[in-house]
Image (cartoon, rainbow, N blue to C red; front, side, top):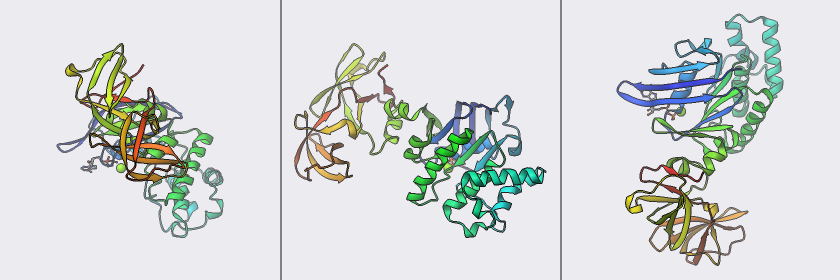
Length: 360
Ligand code: ADP
Ligand code: MG
């Protein structure tokens, strides 16, 4: 087992920079998720760790070895691709054995590892089938099995669930979490799906626009987003953002006017800009509740019933629309007047560059 360390790793294709000075320290056994929108460089970063993509600048260390100049097969990591990349003319057993045969592993040892991986992944009965005779979920497991038999220091998985239908995606997600609990091997998992990141990760690396926005546990990233980007990308339905001007600043707190309600948000040691404007107030729908005594007045424009709760889209006096929560048995309908209440202490404040002010 080994830590994986990236130091100032940068990548460009010709003149186009796709990653700039990426730093991280992945501890052995962690389940790390690279999360970000399409095109932000997640796959490129993963492929650089795997050795499938050259590093322009910086260093990658796995355990006590610097690996960024080593070929993929000497890095001790195993990659699982989105399209599985199974050999169609080989049986499942052959697909899982092939890589080990190539490096001259003893036949009995190969059989032992394949059988153990097949048992772990419950694909024993499928070992003699060809990939074409498997469902998408089964192919996914074979691809993971092929990685497991190599007994790598880390598994690198690039959007491994995105080809599965919704139900299977959730089941496979749970299986993957359980597999990680059992074998404890470091996993680096790439996805653009914030639910996958929240449910699987020990720590999430949120990426955007060539760089890392934040690294933290799912609840750190959710509760204390470092930037407006992170705040908006993690959590569903998304956080509401409203432009605000602070009325006052007082002992580590900003007092802002949100649609007629006076709300206090912690800003810790930071101080507000001169004029106290250019700020954005962020509030999650679950912290903006329909309440008879709510100070924020609005009109319902849309109601989304989720059963256990109801999402109420409300137009405010200034023309902005926010998403608030009501109970499952909400009687609200479009066109009705509604009053909303901000949960004390649940608001977030961002400066003009989208950087969060934080409570400490
Ligand atoms: P993600 O996996 O987050 O969707 P990628 O790592 O695949 O993003 O891509 C990051 C950026 O690098 C994108 O803008 C993409 O167009 C660009 N890119 C990826 N591979 C190449 C390549 N071989 N040549 C040029 N540009 C590339
Ligand atoms: Mg990708």
